Image 1 (cartoon, rainbow, N blue to C red):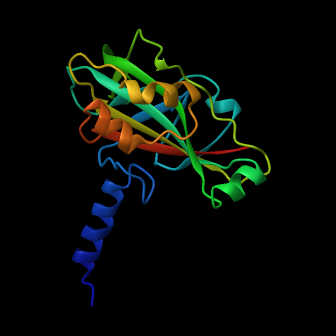
Image 2: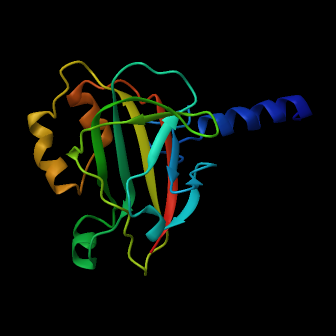
Length: 192
């Protein structure tokens, strides 16, 4: 039998760890603050429209960072056309929506106290706003912030995937690029 204290602790721990969608790897337990216009992705999994997410969001953290970071945004729910989908066994593909390197503290703080992060870089993969088809359920878009290794470069074996965007595998990329687990994460849902 669950005591009220144990139940409260379990719920608190599960909400703290739920910054990325259930089952997604690599998971992040600290929240990346993501804001489109004046609308924040809070709590994780908040719903947005395509129009609201057309431009690159502002993002930040509730900590004082001083290093260099890599920002990644991935659509977890891309389905291919019917023939391609049957050939691949009905599986979904990831689509890379952004990979921005050289992210650093901007020296600015948001009205609610978050340290805003920014980059003068627009890549290696520039921001592509969400655009799920109207005839599909909402797509989950996951945001991750990694510590960027010194002398970071896209691994040779990943360049084509980053250019094509479709079929991006975060775990494989992380291993080949020498990334540790993400420091921060968040996700939203967008309906077509």
